[in-house]
Length: 394
Ligand SMILES: *Cc1c(COP(=O)(O)O)cnc(C)c1O
Image 1 (cartoon, protein in one colour):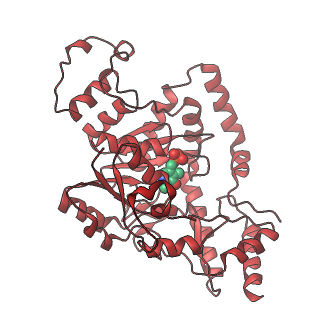
Image 2 (cartoon, rainbow, N blue to C red):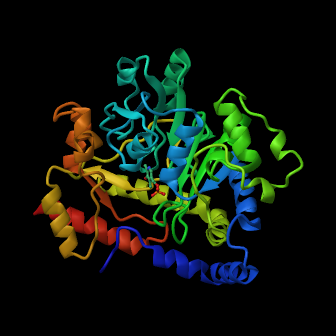
Image 3 (tube, rainbow, N blue to C red):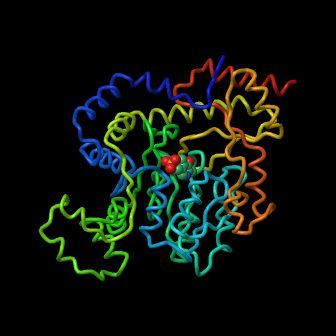
């Protein structure tokens, strides 16, 4: 039996009729950007997540960078985050000119360990960027307390956690800004790239809207005013509609858009997201139950959380052998993440060394993701479990 880590074909085949129909509808409309699909998608996402503003953009990395820039974070500033994440988390901090400051993670949940954050806070610290890794929300309560105590922003990297909940609140809507990705393999995946920025703060929302569209027009002017204490004569745009105002620029921003065709596809998929996330949780709890007796260390989930199991990641002493054994049985696996970010070549200049974040380093050598996707059948999962049990008994 061949089992991929993630199966996007099954999902498409299940929704083929409705997805094909909207793709043709958008093609025939000849409105490919900034149209009705994107507008409706943003409203539906704000409603789904229970937040005031949902602003689409080109991808999750842009979402993170635009968010930091909207908060006025740049050169000379520090942002605290996890070294055990996808590179884009720290990359976004570097893109705006700030410095990522890493804090080690918890060995059971793989998320930022809140008790290690406070000693990294100094005058340069502007924000904390928790990552809801593998679909489980980070322990936000102590992080929110620290942010309040020291006057820091919280930007949530919720790229892997759409639909997850922390104490009944959707991940991504707890801090000042939340960022999502619609990369095809994410829980809500487009047919290409896409991203989203959410906030309950009107001023932040208008800055984000200005920054994502070249810092131009009415939104660009508002963004400029917010970031520069209102030092601009705004009369020039008076009476101009959005189309004409577009050629007046106030900030160096981004060109970061979600396309109409992606928004149309995502609107269809959004209707299934909760069902898919339920199926993911069901598969994860079945793995947990059936693999309990093995030597594998299974992922821990904190209480009062609803995780969305973006990836099912466990730990093993014999990763190399297990990967090879499963591979020979037709089962794909993945390693997330083989190199913690403080040891990446690109961050050599930050002068971290081996031993600085022992938990992240330990996990990098031991973690393994098993196949998991909402359409996975019982037969497929049982086959994977049986193969692992066979490996254990050899
Ligand atoms: C996917 C991902 C991103 C980046 O999203 P893109 O849409 O690929 O730019 C950022 N952070 C995390 C944790 C991710 O998993």
